[in-house]
Structure formats: C-alpha cells, structure tokens
Image: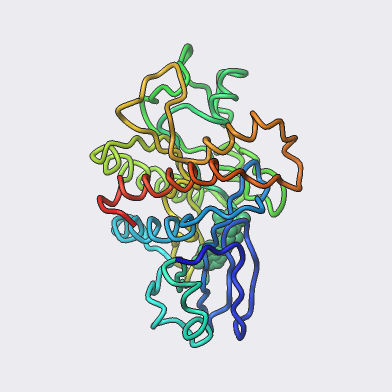
Length: 296
Ligand SMILES: Nc1ncnc2c1ncn2[C@@H]1O[C@H](COP(=O)(O)OP(=O)(O)O)[C@@H](O)[C@H]1O
Ligand SMILES: [Mg+2]
C-alpha cells in the first residue's frame, strides 16, 4: 500500500489542503476528500507520514457514517473510485484507493461540535483552574478522567489558522442563532451517546469527540470525518480508572513523545523517529480493528 504525504491529481482542481485531507472539486456540488498520511499535533503538520493513517481515518469514518445515518444525514456519496470522476481513476487510483471519498459539498458551519462524556484534555485543564468546562460549572471534586453524569456539549470556533477557541453555548446561540445552536447540540449529543454505547460493547471508552456539520440543500448534514482517533479520544475500557489518564488510541502517544523531546511546538515540526512512527501506526490500526471487529 502507498504511503501518501500529499496527493497530486492532475486534471482535478484542488480546493484546499487541510492539515490531513486534500480537497478537490468533483463536478457540480461534489467534492473528493483524500485523507493523506499526514499527522498534525499541537496544530502543526509533521514532515513524517504515518503509514495506513489515511486509510484508517477514511474507512473508520465510513463505518461510523453508515452506523449513524439514522441519527443524522451525512455527506457521503461514494467510496468506490469507479464512481468518482475520471481524473481520480486510472493512473491515480493506486495512491487514492481506500483513502478517498466522493461527498456532497456542504456550506460548512464554522463550529467544532464537541461532546464530552469524561473530563480530560483541555476540559480537565479548565476544570482544574476554574471548576467549569466551556464556562459551565461542574460538580466539585471530580477526578481526572472521571465520567460525567451526562455528556456535555462544548462547542469551539473553527479557526482558519491557529488554535480553536472554546465558546459558551450562549455565545454559540449568538453566532449561529438559537434554533441551529439547539439542533447542533442535540445532534452532537445523540451521535456521542450512540457511538459511546457501541464502543463500550467493543471494549473501548469514547471519552470525547468532535463533529463538523454543514448544510446541503437546506439539510443539516454531518461532514468531514466521524469518530476517528484524530477527532476522538478513545480509551481501553479495561485500563480505565478515574484519577489518571488511561492509555489512549489518539495522538496522545505522539504528544507525549513531543513533550519529552523538548520541541517548542512552533513550526517547523521535527521529523518523527521510526519507533514513534511505528507505535503511532500500530495504535491507529488497533483502534480500527477493535471498533470494526476485523483488521483494515
Ligand atoms: N462535505 C463537505 N463540504 C464542505 N467542506 C467539507 C466537507 N467535508 C469536509 N470539509 C472540509 O474539508 C477540509 C478537510 O480537511 P482537513 O484536513 O480535515 O482540515 P482541517 O485542517 O480543518 O482539519 C476541512 O476544512 C473540512 O471542514
Ligand atoms: Mg479536519
């Protein structure tokens, strides 16, 4: 299988390169998203690709889109290159196979819709300092990684560059209108609950996750990716114990390495050593296999 740092599709117009995905026009109101093997951490993209990462992200998203379609419509049109425009077939196919999707081009809502069922990451940092998460007060004396009584919705603005910023639900309502704010919250929490229940049956805890939504023909639609290790914090249920950070399948492993390495988190990002690349690849593949029930 090809490892891909950056796609090149002669004959297709590149709309943008995201941190991970290359986005192409695909005629009419269609886009093709190609998930590369790029890894970003602390909002900086690394020069070293992680083999299999793009295929894991794409195929895990497709798995979840199918499972959750009854809760909210999603952008997926086709996953088989045979149904893509000609520029994406033929000679380009080997590099794109298994990592590309044909989707409905949506008018994106520039909000990261985050659901949290456990208190970790930036939420733990805020709680320790202020006793609140996304501006809302939580019960006192929660331990790190504790399960919350009910999952909470903590939206953030989707910054074009730089770091996303958490905003309160009230601020969200002011930005997108109270009706859409309510719909985004309901959908995000419904998706989280369904995915959390499924993952638990497969030995994983879905601690938190992030969704993006857009409009297609007036229809609120789930876009981008769904419930991948890039957008979610998954923990091994067997090793979960409140009071500490459980081993996870997300990028925490790389982040830990980077903190140890002393990198100042400013670009350019350093190359990743072989063992860190292999360890990261392993975690992505394991996460896929554990959730889907078969290897990629
Ligand atoms: N169906 C869609 N319609 C419009 N934009 C989309 C759709 N699906 C994904 N996108 C956008 O395409 C880009 C995908 O690239 P990605 O690497 O995930 O970006 P980012 O660096 O923002 O995480 C994102 O900007 C995402 O919001
Ligand atoms: Mg993204």
